[in-house]
Amino acid sequence: MTRTGRLAAALGLIVLSAAAYADESPRTEPFEFVSGGRRLRGALDRPAGRPASGVVVFVHGHGRTDAVEGNWYGDLRRRFADLGLASLIWDKPGCGRSEGSYDHDQTVQSSADEVLAAIEELQRRKLPGSDRVGLWGISRAGWICPLVIERLPSVAFWISVSGTDEKESFGYLLETNLRIEGRSASEARALVDEWRRGMEVFRKGGSFAANQKATANLRRDPFFSEFFGRNGTEAAYLADQKRFIAEGHVFDDASGLMIYVPGLRDRLRAVRCPVLALFGEKDSNVDWRSTAALYKDTIPRLTLKTFPGCNHNLRQCRTGGFRETMTGGSQPVCEGYHDAIVAWVEALETAAATASTRPRVAGSRR
Image (cartoon, rainbow, N blue to C red; front, side):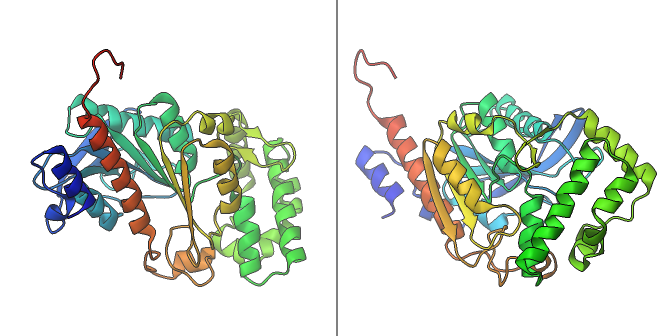
């Protein structure tokens, strides 16, 4: 008998365990909501044969999405359904069948607004499980989810995958990948220093010529030019610079790196729901060690697990480098990654079921 089944028997309830539904596929249906005047389209998976006890809302990282047609995170969504949880996923503006134009520089505040709009629509429809919403988010979602939780403290749990620390991660990505690509430590550091100087020129209103001079060696590096180099014009540089400066970004004085969510430490300290943080130890996109240290220092109810030999997307890898991730095809999911999530969520569900059926003591306040 499963833990869920033993709990049901102990409480004298006539319910079916998660195992009874394990061979039944979740029911998937279209889901739409409006955020920022755009109709965003996604998919809602519901567990088969019973009402959902909660909803897991998936929060994307950087980049375009094909979440609905591509059935992103399908295996994990099915396992959530086995636990009696619904899953909600959608495509970003301008992706899939969602309205609007895709913006690679969409702010984290705008993304948080999207998540909140999706949750509001779930609750407006009074869908089963919408009174108990958890978040699953990857990478950039490490900035988005704390903003959502700050505005919606009732969030039941947060699963953070390859989360972020306070600062811009591109410097770490660049240096780590230059080393993977064969540059020496001193060569990689020199090229990253060029990137920092170029960014400083850009953000402080410096000229196109000064930016080009500051980054001359970096722009010639094969790795940088292949994946990130731009043969932009002066007009495009000035237009991007004007927009960027007008946005009023905050920067860390010591490193010169942009801070995406000012006061992130205080926001994390205020998170009261349970948090599961998962990291691949070969992540070359974000500085997972820095994020892990940040989480340990701030999040009150934290469970943290790392996976050797796994990359930013929690897939098995050889180097974890950007090139391997982008061009290496579909690597298998890290062994134990989904199991770790399911075991943690199942324990939360068991605790929630126990709390909801515990007899109230007369005169007590709950």
